[in-house]
Image (cartoon, rainbow over all chains, first blue to last red; front, top):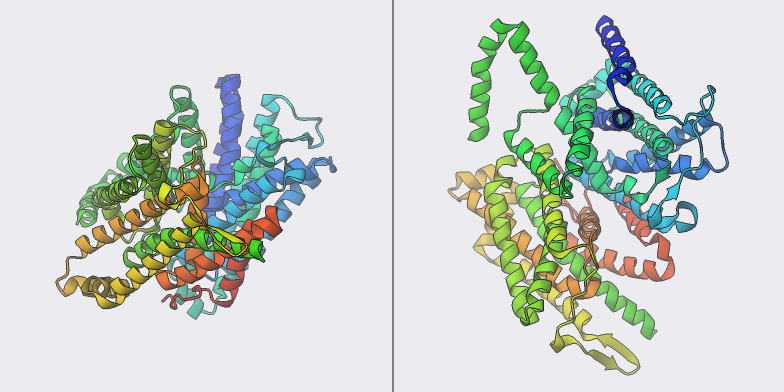
Length: 329
Length: 286
């Protein structure tokens, strides 16, 4: 718990200090990164701690975003609206999850993909409510009781705080008995089942939590972007979030957030030079997979080991080499 | 009545198209345990290759053949170069094929642009068959015919030939097949190329039916995944039945509830999964 406390304090300091060095463009970028980090962490939770690889997570993001856009026309209280978003996306995750988690891993992947795409099509086709392919602008204004939030700096701090809260919540879940059992299920489902745990309940719990958090990220995005379109639920967006998780590192909480930062910075940077971002992203992905050395957070840990624990890495190094040879064979 | 039959034929034609795509997907999945997310883009590529060669005044059938060959070759290259490295690694496969789909889709966008294109129906089949009052477009009948032919061919290959026996054995126990002295690597390359060629073929045949536009790859991928899920993993027989089911239901859904056709198909999938989590014809997953 002490370690979590230190990390959290460091994180808060980082969030507070960033605006001192960033330009307006940088602040906007950082705000988007916070939102995407929440989204990526929600997917990272089920991928890294429950072993469920979902390609439809953008569906929940879209639900959250459209809830703010559509219901926000009638409900102005931001807390209430955010709560509605989280509840709707969480409930959707709970109901669909009951069916989804009965299936094996390949099925789960394909079904979640179909589910995300279903929402994409629904947002597209329910034109009277959602504006169809043209999307819709968001009329709701974020107001958390300190006045309306409109300036980039205000958005920055709100999203930064939301990010920290999401991180702490996830950390608490992961460290809780339920989180540990979920991880145990990922590692050996049969054993946990034999130990008397109801495997499905824990998987469903993680999935619901993850879906609700993705919906939360989506509703924040809706406020931030003041425009929503069906693309928010497309499976390519789900795939991109998965890429963020992988770039950052699966099996850690903070890795997906790092992945989201790198991904969004790269996307913005490369898109200013060329229209061929999808191709470049695809190529980066293929190369990352072929190198196959985990995500950035794993590399950071590796370097940390080299710097602080020279002795251990001396022993560890040959092992790594052996592993590499195994992969080649 | 005649409208009903015409709709039924359209549904069957779409179903056969889905079957051809899903068959490739499910064979790759069953034998190699790879979810090929680039399958939809291969389908799109197949359609666009035909489009290019037809523009060069080539016959539709030659263009179709070229399309099938090129996608098969691309399949071989992809398997030898990339897919080979990620067998047994689920997450890596997903990422790799997802990355590939992005690259191929962007190349298609680069070469052919983003405008919607249409493939003309080949002259030979650009006619209608009228029985009494009913009029059936010949091309749709032809697609149904090809789909059935393919199903027969797959059945023959699977149950009557040595290759089929090897592939069936490969689905059951890959390590054992290797131990029996069969070159599993070669089988995998062949299977992947075959699947890619099927995607190319269905793209070529589907072009005149559904047109060509950006995003078609995703639509077709999702529908064929649903077909595979309903039918059962690795079972092309299941794919055949469920493809017809999905094609017909989707077509009628589009007529009766235009905005909810996708939802209906999805709900059917959910119901099947609740009753039989392994799909209609799938075996219990260990």
